[in-house]
Image (cartoon, rainbow, N blue to C red):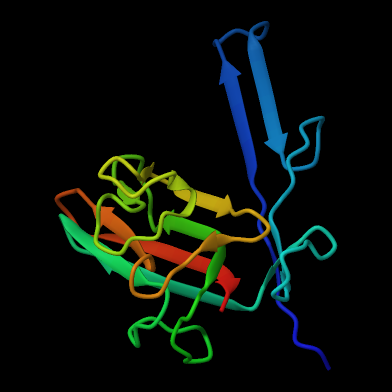
Length: 183
């Protein structure tokens, strides 16, 4: 039997506004692929090719974990070569291409924030940020999910293989991280 990886991610949002009178009520609903707003969910399939497989990005390895990041501290996820970070089978991560990144706050409150991205950290991977300088990051109050190009973002062991997640706040935060790519 051939090995497979299957993943799908969906988003649904609902918003309601009421002015307090029966005449002024507005209801909006946004759901992926429904109600006139077409937004594809990101799909993953097993493989290493730089082509889609039935509309899915091909990956052959992934990482999933929940991390606590102390106040004013940095989590530096080593995407290739550190024995600290392993896939679900206990194998050290050795990504050469990253194709999907999900970082989600645990118990978000809209005030806690982490900064995901290079941020001038040593050996940081550029990913979708267009650079590695101090302003190359995305503030995450709730979650961020990024599907990469079909070929993936390049990970270079030893020089461009760190994904920094910085907690600039005064209290520890918990984040869930899911990464998928090619080793």
